[in-house]
Length: 74
Image (cartoon, rainbow, N blue to C red):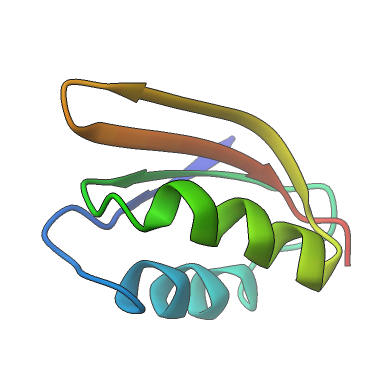
């Protein structure tokens, strides 16, 4: 099952703050889909994944909405 984090309406740094909080409740191997409308998330979330050792599986943008699929590795 994939967790969904709706971060629409949240501005930097809140999508990352919410993502980090949610990841603490997940098990290694679990996946989460983050949906955001903050343009800053386009660079912030991939950088956060790299910094924390989690895997960015997918990143897409459509109509001002950014969607990320992340796998917890640690």
